[in-house]
Image (cartoon, rainbow, N blue to C red; front, side, top):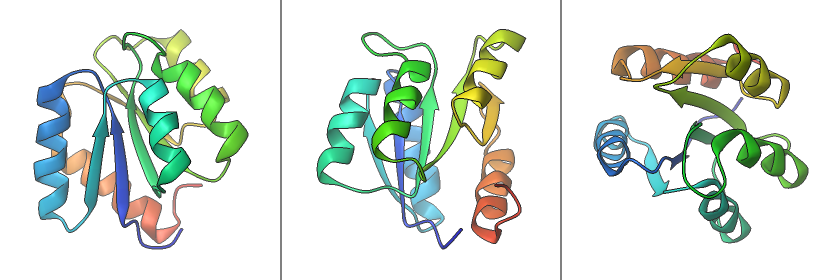
Length: 125
């Protein structure tokens, strides 16, 4: 995968969005935030992102539904799923829908940066 320039964060928690925007922005990424899956799809109609970091539980369109719809229009965009309510079923569902990673909240920034570096290096499909 080529250099990631733009990351779309899809999460209804404003603190998570602002924290990721600040921390990943310091790493040189352009970070855009939306608050549910439908807003994510709307964003991608007019803009592009090389990576999406999406929560699972959100009002309106949840993260798993978002990934399913995303794959129809943007099959090559990489998706990292994050959740505070992880379980085997949601992990399996996220991977079936095409997520490349599944991480638990609270996020560990070093872990997330390492995943992004591995994506850029092509060591994660």
